[in-house]
Image (cartoon, rainbow, N blue to C red):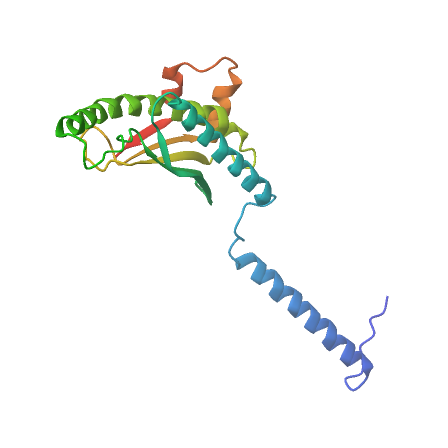
Length: 207
């Protein structure tokens, strides 16, 4: 096979230059692709589907909170709202008043007011204990439904507690958190998890 060398002044020169330019552009694109930072969002992640699942999670949490104290005063001051943090997972936050004090009028006696405040101080720690248990259960029940969330990422619920009359045994917020893979493994066991098993998977922090 004989190679034909184009005449420097002929048409072959133009073709050769165009080919060389195309190769240079292709090489430059390849280099840029190699050094460019990764695009936000995991490949193949359906964020619209994740948002729908997060909305359902918000509703399930609200339903659970409303049912906790159906026969007793219990107020959701801020409805559950979730967000997704890349690399961490889903965080849901809400604000609660564990024990709303009865509406008092200017004619309320000091004795009635003192009794109401005493009830508040007694009831809040009891309701906080119930809230801790319920948050763990909600994460175990609903965290696995976030199928668009990678197993290595987390699901967290942050509850801000309304505490206008400060009580030392009532924190400002409580955070329940679990890795989704651990929740999946817990669910795979079949039976409803025991409190001790839940405590090993779902961590609680209060401050």
